[in-house]
Each structure stands twice: as C-alpha cells, then as structure tokens.
Image (cartoon, rainbow, N blue to C red; front, side):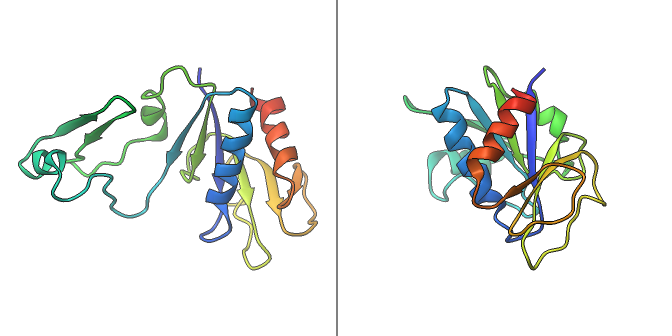
Length: 161
C-alpha cells in the first residue's frame, strides 16, 4: 500500500512552501516522492496552440504527451465528477510516499499548517497527526514550528516511511 501524507490548511498559510521543502529533503535522503495537488478551480497544463491542445479541442478524451524527459496524460472529465484520492493514488508506480496538498476531507493522515491569522481546521477534519504553527499552541498532537522543516520531515520519515 502506498504511503500518503497530506498537507492541509487555509488559503495562504504556506502549504505549497512546506510541500516543496519536504519533497526536497525527502529526495535528498533517497526517497522517491509523488505529489497530488487538489485544485478548487479549473486548470490546464497544456498550452493553447500546441498540437496536443488541438487534439483535446477536437474532442479527444485522453491525450498523452511524450518526450525523452517526461510524459503526461491528460484526461478530460466529461462527467465533471472529481476523482477520489484513492483513485488518483492508483496512478503512481514505484513511489515511496505521496505528499497530498489539499483533499482535507479525505481520510489520509494530514499535517495542518496554521498561521497567526488563521484558525485551526483540525476540529473539522479527520486524521490530523501534527500541526505546524508560527507560535507555540496547546495541542494533544505533535507541534512543529514553521522554521523547523527538518524536524517535520524526520517526523514524516519516522511515522510513515
């Protein structure tokens, strides 16, 4: 079973910063890391005018773009039903851990990022295993300071890897 750790919190609390720092430290330690980013809005990874974009515009349901360095598969969600996290996780191969940004209502273990100006969400969601904060707060789960990404990464390694 694939290992999954989520990073959750309100908008603009620094989730992406922590995701990228954790990825960097895990990769330096030899782990293969995958990520899933939840988007609350429409997005496009393809560029208008490219051949692959034209394929999709013409009605292709799935398009694969491939080069010697990487490949990507774009699937049009015709029925507008968003995939569940466990369905998306099946897309990964040969990965030690998947870091998920968002998907806070799913049941995977989560680390909540809070700032001075944000309220905590861990009372509203399940499976928060740690908190990252600007300042010390009362908590019955592990608390990490924002400036200590190394300790947070070690926690992830010890608990999940």
